[in-house]
Length: 337
Image (tube, rainbow, N blue to C red; front, side, top):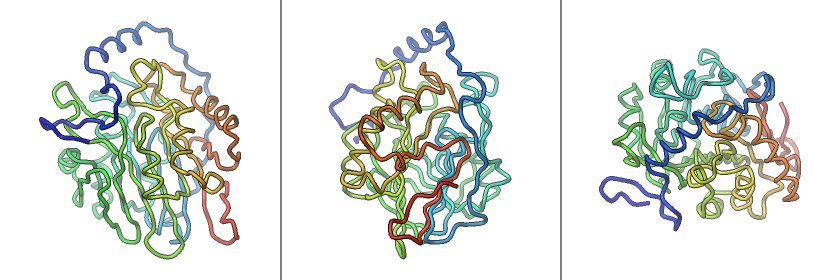
């Protein structure tokens, strides 16, 4: 990662993310492409069952709110990733990708939020109206962003905020939080492209029963996964994006296919695939690419089976579903809530 001329770049030997000409080219092609919307009910829904107000310190829960928004209960803390409660992933309310499913948890039903993690500043991952609501309701929450993202979040009301570079680490009470590399891009307009950093996040308890979660944010497949696993693993759960991957000539540099998500999981969890769960995110909520909303999980299951990984380690959550890791058995088995 470099910041030459105040712009960030991906360090791996790949083509840079597409420029604005390619964005326009894809947008025009997408505008006239026939929609492949799935039928209603194609994305399964469930009633959340996270712990109120908090889970026990030795328990871990993961609840999929929608897209990349996940409620993680770890070390007795409540953590939100990329919170977006907006109807559209867009700078305006009358246009742009519209939410296909409402957030599985209403803002007013959230438990007390202790930590919020932001991966980057794209509209489907950073919604400033949501930030304002969360900051007003949970003024004591600690916010963590990659470099260059914090100023927007702070102006929206976040009081306790820290900006981190890749591999930086902070401690939030009983949880260690690390900023991890990702292959992506940033920008909310024409003039700010790649002027702020993008990242994933790792969470790990610092005492008692070890719990660890990796949140990839938004990323293409890249060499960083093996290093993340070696430095910060093993993980109980790996939250990996599996959607918005077509067309490949454009999306391959910023988003993973389901097959690449399986490769990333293997890199992250070498020697530990029977104990770590892959939790798919970034699908089924906003249609921001040419793949159908219900296609990613089908391809993921096929790739998973082909890899020979245990079925129980694929935590394919329904929209709103909670998965729980509870102590009490020798294997600390993954439980289905």
